[in-house]
Length: 354
Image (cartoon, rainbow, N blue to C red; front, side, top):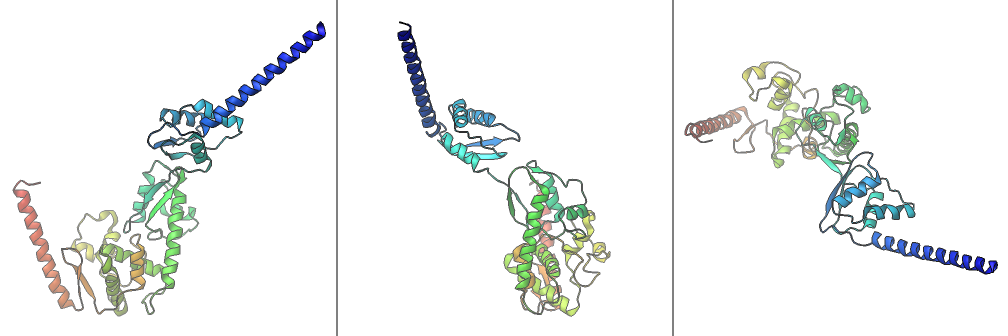
């Protein structure tokens, strides 16, 4: 009798274990099916992950956004599969109806949406630093440091930073340091300048790529018209060859710094600074802006003309002249047009128009 009870007891235990195994298998199959089934989100959603956020918190956020129906089940399934993805900080674009498997794979592959910063040609290194300092998605290691300290941190102590950073759009993951972004821009300019210099035209009146960078920075500030760059560079090259001063207003403005009030006065043209190309011969000591590739190419491939002067037309672009007499005549036309525009504006405002 006792033996029969024991046998029945073992049979019951075996049956219970079989049922548990069956239930576990069914449960796992259901979890697996849900893990690979399309999610509930009808449209793409953006998930922002903060530093030190756990996978449970990330899954809960996805549920709040409507991209996951059962975050706890997803977490349980991943534990069973020994999957614990590291979720990088930043923004993720979760496609419509993405399955939990798709979302976890996105995390495992680190498909975070990159932020970007655009450096505009013709701006200065100071402008670049202000833009970096204003960004909340960048780790700031250089804020408050001098330009000399920044260049030392980049591994280029003693270099003047102006002009040495290539203007472009740079993509980066949130939490990238300002030093890393500056290094990307510095290295890019170094590579571009080296390649441009290697392909330069023969017989240029300067001997180093840095001097080409200086000239390119002036060309960048002198015109926004793409097909004028090489001709303007040609004017400056002609003047350098003849020992004439460049007489470039942008160099004067750069030398004035914070003293520039928006207008170049006669006193500004006659007050000597290292950047006043009306009072000093040759190129200024450093670039005056961050030049584009087009201006770099213009500096090393200037147009071959007899032009020695140029003046704005007042309608966009410039008039080019070979003689001072021609230049003075074009200058009078420009000044007359400028006066007409100012008078028309004054009449417009006097009439009560905004």
